[in-house]
Image (cartoon, rainbow over all chains, first blue to last red; front, side, top):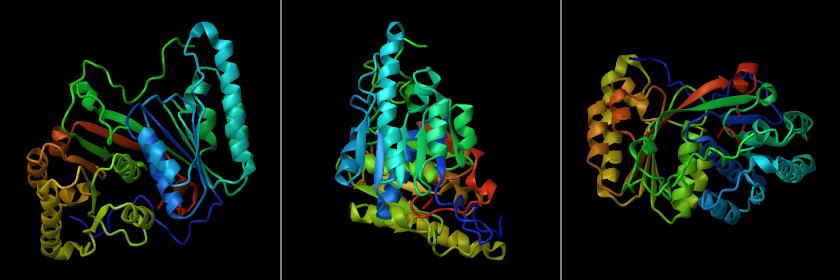
Length: 189
Length: 189
């Protein structure tokens, strides 16, 4: 069938240049956006890097697994989405809370103390006009050269895709929920 | 913009039933297939579950980060793809090696000692006719009820998609390699 090696997703070819850091965006309506970000977190930890995770949507019981293990492994973990009202009548309150949350995250990026900063579910704040995409793009563009950024969330705004190095759309093909199966601790969260 | 909470990817709605286990498939030509599988591994470990990872394609220097940290965290790790020839003139040798590798993996599934079994890059073996997809489908279908399976790789065969609960296509939108940037340790591997 083949006399080629498999289509590795991660070739190191000698003609490729080294980038001091990259910006990854995991978007789309499918599973795996945050999960893949946590996979990157794991790689970075394995390399001995400092990692920060900023969660922009209240997770409730979700992501307790990642957070627990992440903290145990030394990840700086900020749950920044807890104060949002999700109430269209209180847009100003949500905008103020989003500005506060973004101040924390952009401060972490600018400080340069973490080699990887995960901005989990940040896209929703841009898409709901709680946050100006331009502020995000500026912070990413002007980040310290060694700081890698991973952004997750549906419908990543065009400005963010433009400055990203790698963008993957996680596309929903089939989901257990379609068949009435609930999420499972240890697998989905 | 909204008075709905965000479109969480993982609702627990009371009307949904509990499944004893699920089968996840991460396919497509984009990044994040294995990475998301390792994110699931992390969740399972956070829950205190036993996890096994079977890698079906020789990783060389790849995935050293996951393997190192995975082993440290107690994951049973099998690099099963080391013996393949990638030589179309030696199809029989590759088929024999694939059968051996599959015997290990299917034995782990059937033994039921691991709550999560990751079959990393298994799809290639099916697509290259090194392995009969039916054997994989049978092992997955007849697995112990508590064993969750995660399969990764491009072009997941239809038979596997049929028995999966959740299938995500990681679609390549944009990649650093397109711009001549090489893979980075700590991010890509």
